Length: 76
Image (cartoon, rainbow, N blue to C red; front, side, top):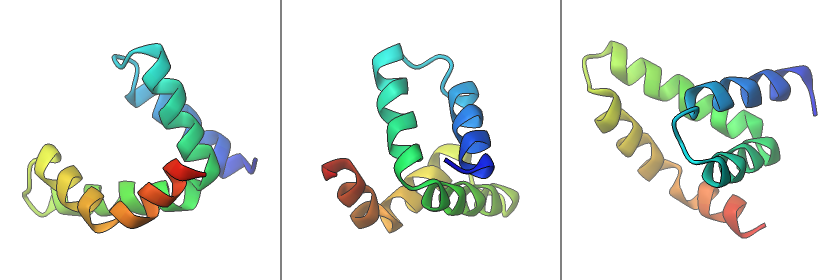
């Protein structure tokens, strides 16, 4: 894992601190498989938030956009 992947993984653990341990491990495993995708998703969510959207709406819209890539990752 690259340093960028490691840092992204640590950031995800911090952001998911209130999520149950098992789900947190599943999410960090997905992030480890394709850190660039999750970086792109995070950046797009931040852009939308700065544009005035709520975090929840921005996240939902971006996740819809990348649902095929996310589904592929989950099946690996």
